[in-house]
Image 1: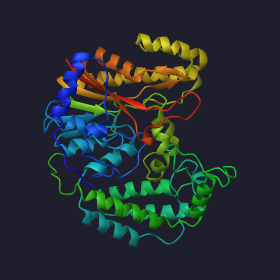
Image 2 (image 1 turned 180 degrees about the vertical axis):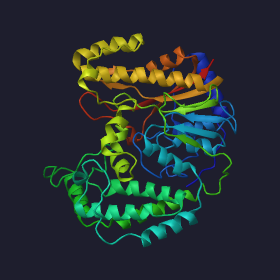
Image 3 (image 1 turned 30 degrees about the horizontal axis):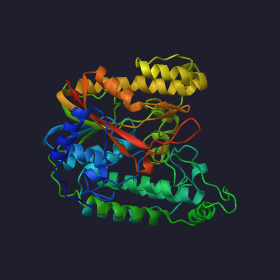
Image 4 (image 1 turned 90 degrees about the vertical axis):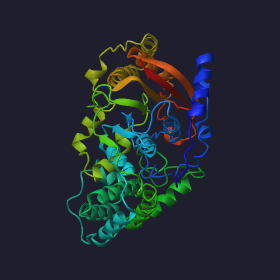
Amino acid sequence: MAYVAQPTDGILERLLDRYARIRRPLSVDFRNLVHWIRGTDHYTHLLHPYPAKLLMHIPHFFLQNQILSIPGDTVLDPFCGSGTVLLESFLAGRQAVGADANPMASLISQVKTRPITAARVERSLSFCLDHIPTGPIEHLPDVVNLEHWFYPHVVQQLARLNQAICRVPDVMARRVLKICFSNCVKKVSLADPRLSVPVRLRQGQYPEGHWLRDQTDAHLRRLRKVNVTRVFETIATANIRRLTTIENLPQDIRPQIRDVDARRLSLEDSSVDLAITSPPYVGAQKYIRSLGLSLGWLGLCESTDMRRLKSESIGREEFRLDERANFLRTGIAQADSLLDKVRDRDPLRAHIAATYLIEMSQAIQELGRVIRRQGHLVLVVGNNRVAQLPFYGARYLQTLAENNGFRLRLSLVDDIHSRGLMTKRNATANTITREHVLLLQKE
């Protein structure tokens, strides 16, 4: 569950020296660079699934040295997601600051990085299980297409369990149980468990002989008689075990997590020593939609407000017709040349990509404001395709960073082994198979 960290100063110095000599991206394998981390179930990293989750080895590598930061320094992740960078910063003795406009991401990050004794959560779990109401629940949560995603008996079981969790008096422990409940929601829904973005399963949707037919039909049969409380209790028990790995860690450095947009961080100028982040990809995972069921069940976002939340997300894909009519220029010559070609094939995809780069420019400008002089920025970016044409996201974001006072010190390329970074959804997108890791310094 835990690992013994080793310093990475020597490895980083050698990489910096080699890159300074050849000025070409270096191929690395972060799993090999930090070989003392084996597997993924360490500390509270697997407390809750999250789409396109950042490989923990990457922030770990950049935090286990005193070249980029020292204990007590402020480390920022402006797209914190489920808190991978924040947890690694906390474990490395840094003051972690995270931001994400998605309230579900903020909740997961808070629970993942705030030590709480297992005994407190166990007591609250017992209280919850003892106070589950027995009668039908009439006032159901505002979940988009509730009947589409759940069998009726599952809806009632979830509603009763949710009501019991809301009655738990211990606020911190209640948050832990909400995270467990959110995980349970996806497991007992009719959404395909293999996909991050919900797609409803149906009996016999695959033809005879297809390798997924028996597996899918068996899963649907289990859901017809599933005991939701038992699923929840299994998840909670596993997460309590994970929480024991951080319950005795020092609590004098508490991560700060904010429900704010990366373009408006509400931080003081030059207050950050190091930023490590994996921004959303153009046309990548639909973060809001992938967590939509949990957002509704936990009351974090009403169905009528879901469109607004999506519209505030960088990398979004839904635009009104009048918005699509705008002919956008990004100010990046190579990107604009590509987008002219994309526009001839698919005007919507061109608008999506242009908007993404414009909004990422605003986010990087904000990073330039809050990172101190000589401070560092680590960007984890993947190239992909837009309308079948190569979209060099790493190159474009590097240009944006250099336009905002950063200089490139190191460029690394790592193959992706995690299916969590899959972004293929339609004929105009593709799968990201390599990640570019850029280390930049504020001048």
